[in-house]
Length: 141
Length: 141
Length: 141
Length: 141
Image (tube, rainbow over all chains, first blue to last red; front, top):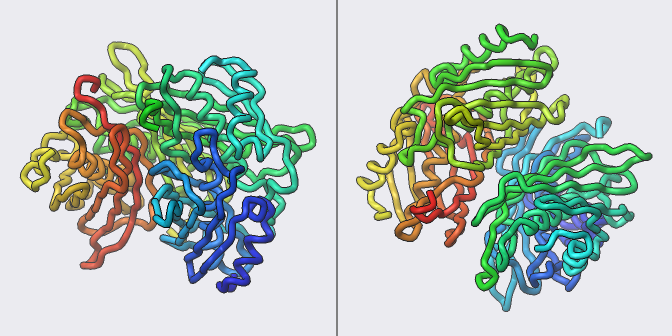
């Protein structure tokens, strides 16, 4: 995949769930994708914290895109395994995510991501994610 | 938490993100919660498969509720760590989830969940999740 | 790999670390391997409990062998990702492990394992493991 | 726990499995522990690579020690959940590990570790681990 922001914006916009939540890419490089989400009332838990599912979606999609930037032509990235640790309660106005490939491969790429929430102008580190991404030939998808 | 379906329905309905997605509990017992989600176009990936984030949200919330059924009064269940394996591509009309506590504890409970998609009347096993749930005294939340 | 106990015994005996710890297979089937370990003083923590590393080694090797029983000729199983939850303190005379493939694949197989310790004749469930196993062509190993 | 190397050396030496493998701490700070292992033939797989169990033991014990450096008096660190990704085949003369606390807590601390192997004088990054550590009052252990 070509690594420029307009390409990445089309990639994010083409996934209905990601577009529905309001997740947008903000920067890209080889093996790196940044993204963010303006929080709305529907993204929360009954406890007043952002639902884990929102943050996991943000991290998973951004890690998949980061892996896709390094994938060979004709190969699609599919999440095989996804693991997250929730470091702190997430509240605030906006989520910021930075995803990166820590080891690209032919069959499997390993990725990581961090999520911060922006609360009264301060960045609070709320989630750390790791994933095992499978690279699947287009005709086997 | 009292373990009956009306209580569980209020518990799910009170979480805006869960209500917004359309996730509903269908059965409950001590340490067990079943739930489901009627799939809509907005729940999918650009590849035509259900987005991992939708399935993780379903599994996470159902595991949290299962752990809450066994929690002592005054303790809230919070996801500390969440790990999922995506076994097969998920398409179809409906997701079904079964969550259970595999080891309840005073500080930490371990849970698991499976997600199936219902496709042309057949149940296909698409995701398996595990979580480490923290039991937090209400006044520390 | 042919699935009979003598083949599996040679497979376990050929791995120096597994032989050194004293891990032995006890039963095998398509996608399933059972194994055990007679506990010695050197397998423990300073707290008097079995060290997590001993149990993880037992689970990892047994899951790898279970995946190998379903691998195509010329493909080797390599652990890509390994996740464990430690349910209870492990003490006793012997560890028992049951490993199984939950989803075999061409590039990736997903496996799980449980470990019990045998304490005064009683089986205590102490660990649950999940792994993502990569199937690597012999010439790429 | 007091954070100096002699204290840490006694902590590592008191765990029979860690001493038996030959794992030794090399540096310590608040929430950080470095350790290493001189590889011996018994640490390997049949494929000529270091067994995952050896690297997981190194990472797990070092992360536990790192969490213990920040634990309140009277609290013991116990691994609740441990997850590892094996980035590359590990061969060479020595394993090096750096473990750190990414979020300390009263009930739960989150830790991470990296393992490198030293091969012909070069450091190769072979494993990345994450763990959820439970802080257990001494009288409940």
